[in-house]
Image (cartoon, rainbow, N blue to C red; front, side):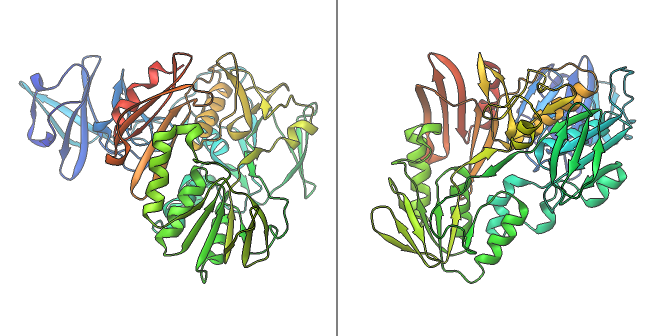
Length: 499
C-alpha cells in the first residue's frame, strides 16, 4: 500500500502519486477512502470493511479486488461490490474528477444499478434451503444480489433469524455486543427481498424423486433446487448429570440466551473441552468476574492445530487472567453443584458448559438416499449424489487435495453458500476457497488460513507473546496453513501459496 496515510482527497492528489498497483489511503471529510487505478481509470471506494469496519488500506490488493486484513472479506475496487463473505454489504463509491495533473474525490457516487441476470436456461424457478445458518443465508443473499427473481424459501429449525454466530462466544457472551447486533439482517430484509423465512420449522423428510420436502407440521414444499445447509450439532456427554438444567452447550443464539440467564447469579463455571470456542467462552465468562475452570483431556490444548508455541501462548494468556485449567483430565459426573473428575477430584460449579466438538447433521440426507460419509458427499461444484440437491457448510464433505475435507468454519460456510448460488445462476464454479477463521482472546486476535490437519512441520517467525508472529504449517514440504497474530497482511499474501 502507499505511504500516503492522511491524504485529503477533496483537496486533490497529484496523478503521479497514484501507483499503477496497490491503493492510496486517504479521506473525504471524516470518511476513510481508497483511491486506486484499475485498467487505467481511477476508482474511489470506502476504506472501511462493511463487515466489522476493518481498515482496507492495510489489506491486500489482488487485481481489481481489495481484501480485508481482519476477516478476509473481498470487494471490487471498480464497483465496491462485496465479492466474498463475511461482508455482504457493498462499499460506498465516490466520484473521481481529474483537473489538470491532480485527481479530486468530491462526493458519493450514484448507486449502481441492480445486476441484470444473464439468460441461463437451467436456472431453477423454486429454490429451497434447509438450514438458517451461514451457508443458507449467504446463498439466498447472493441469489437476490445477482438478480434471481423467482421463489426462495428457507426452512430453519432455529427460533431466530440467521445470526452472527462467531460473536456468540465472543463479545455477545462477554456482554459487550448488543442483542440487535447479532442478526445478520433485520427482519424486514427477508420480506423486502421476498425470501420466505420459516423459523421453528423442522424438516422430517426429503423425497428427491418428487423434489419435495416434508416438515414436522405436515407441510410440503416443492423445489427445483435444494440446498442442504443443516450444519452440525454439539456432541453430548452420556454421563450422569449432564442432562441437568444448569448444563449448557453453545451453538445457537437461543443457547447463548439460555447460558446468559443461567450465569446471572452464578459464581463459578466449568467448561468441558478446550477448543477455540470453549476458550473464547472461558475468556468472555472470566471478563464477567466468574470463576472459570476448564477441563480437557489434552496436555496442551490446541497444539494439534496451531503447534506447541502458539498453544502454550494461548494457554498462558488465559492463566494470566485467572482461568484454572485441569488438563489430561476427564469428567465423570455432575450433581448440579459439584463436577466429579475421573481422577476422583471435584470442582464446585454453578454452571457447566460442554464444548466437546460437533457432528454434521446428516440424518435427513442419509434417509433420502444421498451419499454420506462424515458429512454429505459433494462434487467440486457442491452437488450431492441426488439431482438438483446441493450441500454447503459444516455438513458438506468436498474434494480437496486428492481426498476430502469437511470444515466447520463460519466464513467457509458462507463462501460455500455463495458458490452454490453462483452455480444455480449458471456459473459452473468449483469451490476452492481455503478455510479461514479468527479467534479472540483478551483483546488479541489470532487468524488462521488453510487446511491445517495433518501438518508435520511448523515454522514460527516472531513472538506470540509480543502479539507479532506468523506461523507456517507444512505437510511433507508443502505449505498447507498459516496463522498470524499482528501480521494480517502477511497472512493474506500467503493465500496463493497454500496447497
